[in-house]
Each structure stands twice: as C-alpha cells, then as structure tokens.
Image (cartoon, rainbow, N blue to C red):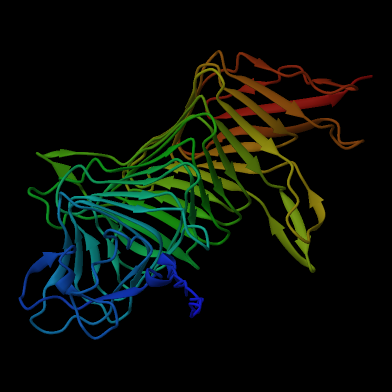
Length: 481
C-alpha cells in the first residue's frame, strides 16, 4: 500500500504599493503659449498651456481641478498666438502668479482671479471687468510685487495681502465708471512712482507712499465713454492708515481725498508733502469739480516740514484731530533746523480756498517731538502756516505750547464756541511776555475764542489782553507782584 505523499504549497501574497497622490500632483509651472490666433482665448482651455512636458494640452490648466497649487507663468507670447482671458463665468484661484519682464500683452479677468502670491513685470496689464484679489494665503504670507510699466486695471481689485507697486503702470480700472480698488483690513499696499488712476480707492488697511522723491496718482480719462467719467474719483481711508514717508511727496491729481472712521490715521513724516488736485479744469457736463480734502474722523499727524495742500479745493476737518509734532528749533551734528507745518487750501493763483475745523471733538494739538539725533531742542514757538483762509468753527479746541502760532495768508474767522488752551511757563525775567497768536497777512480777523486758558502760576494777563485787532490776535502776560 502506497502512502500518498503530502505536499505543502506556499501561497505568495502580492504586496500592494500605493503611490502618494501628492507626488503625482506636485505643484507645477504652467506657461501660457496660446493657441493660434490674434485675439483672446479661454484660460480654462488646456491647449493654451504647457506644463513643461513638451506636450501642451494634456495636463489641465492652473487653477483647474486639482491644480490650485500650480503657477501660471506668462513669459513670451509668440506671434499669432492668443492672449489669456478668464471668462465671466469662471473663478480661478492659484497659489502663485508669475509675469516676467518679457510679457507685453493684456491678461483679461472678466470672472474672478485670486492669487496667493505674485510677481508681475513687463509692459502688459491685468485688466477686464471682473475681480482680482491679491490674497494673503501663501508663504511668504501674501506677498505681491508689480514692477516695470505693468498695470493693474481690473475693474474690481482687492488687496488682502501685501502689495508693493513699484512700477509706473496704471492703478485701477479705465474702461468706464464703477471701478474700485480696496486695501482691506489687514492688507498693506506700498505705492512708488507716478501712476494713472482709474478707480475709486478705499483703504481699510494700510497704504504707504514710498517714492524716493515723488509718488503720485493722477486722473485718467482713457477709454471713457465721455470726458469727465472719472471726475468724481476719490481716495478714501475708512478706518485705515496712510503714511507719506520722510522727504517724499504724494499727490492725488484730479482726485478727492476723504478720511472717515475713528481709527483712521494719515501720517506725514518729516518734510513729507501730500497734495490733492492740480490746475486742470476737470469738468463733467460743463460743471467743474474741485478736489477737496475731507477729514471726517480719525487723526492727521504732521511732523517738521510736512505739508498738506490742495490746488483748488477746500480742506475740512470735522470730528477729527490734527496733531502737530514739531519743535521750533534743534541741532543735529552742529547744523541748525527750524520747525513748521503747512496746511494750505488753494495753491493755484487766484484760488484762495478755506481750511475749516468744525464740530465737537475736533482738535488742533501742538505736541512735543525730538527729531532723531537732535540736541539743543526748543519745543514751543512752531508756526502753523495756512496759506488761504482759516475757519476755527463750532466747538473746535486748540491745545498748544507757549508761543505756537498761526500764520494765515488771508481771512481768519473764530467761532465763539472755539477754545484755546496754552501750556508752558515763560522764562524768568521775560515779563511782559507776548506773542502774535494769529496773524492774517492779507486778510481780516473776525470773531473771538469762547475761552482762553489762564496764564500759569505767577503770571497774569496784561490789561487789555488778549487783544483782537483787525488782522491779529495778540497775547500778553506779565509776572504777578
């Protein structure tokens, strides 16, 4: 009897290897090549893109499904190749946008384009009737730069991240009315150079004018259906901040400026100039529009040598503070300096306008300030130059140091509810001590302060003081017996 041999069989189990999805979908750079033609073609047509594998049209498009982390790159557009366009029905989000200095064409956004970081150069434009958002969701966190003559002319622009606009291209929409440019809360925009403006600008975050000399935004009528379509453009701070750096100039030509909200702040550093309007007669339907400065809340801070001026408009403060940080004299390294500030309404010949302060909570405050490296500093005695007319209106409070004063080139009117508070003690042996508080060079002084603070201890009013003359308010104190 034969025994059956028992055999043992080993079962080999197959090992399954899972390929990580992230490895296959790593962020890629997609370069726009454009299909044949001379007009525009849809961003979402993958035949317009080359992801670097040598075969256009087989890898989707940046911002498409599973491609939000990819980089769209615009470099050289060949002859007879179509330019990019995001249709009004499309919404594209990309991690990084790269436009090189070789790019010369428009990138049209009629839908929405959101970029987490970007660098734009060349001589083209981001344009269209849609919405472009410079967002804050990348590393470095939401950093965007625009250089050369590249323009950003999309109808609606939102800055949530940090945008450095160092080129000479246009800022904002230029194809009709309704354009807006918003620096949102948390957003930060730096502007350098001279630019045309096609949109209303709203700053809820921070706006820095860094010009290495001159920064400017000027009105443009390019593409307007009728001349004057942009006459009422405004630059608005809404609980945001604007800073013009030391020795720089920032101008809004043909554009009004408005500051609103209790936390809004405009800062003019030492020798910084902020000018609104120019001598161009912008008109719409035969009616001219003056370009005014309206500070309806918050604070304007001015440092030595700074100036806020309009060409043909008024300057109005209501429910706002003007804080003047300046000594009257100091030295740095043996060189002597004197301090002053200027707020002028109407710099053009024949255009005398009015600087007005009015309303409860409106203040003019002269404050101590020591410039970097300064020695032998004298704090009081700073002139406030108002080259135009000055109105100190209802409930305005002026707080100043000893001998700070107002120079007004034309008329000055003081409301009976306005108040003046003076701090400081005259030098010993200087009795009687006196100065011109307000001097109207070519105009008349009308009205009186509702109250002026009493002299400090050991001093008293000289009989007849304060003295209101036809063009001067004169203050005199004397030591008590």
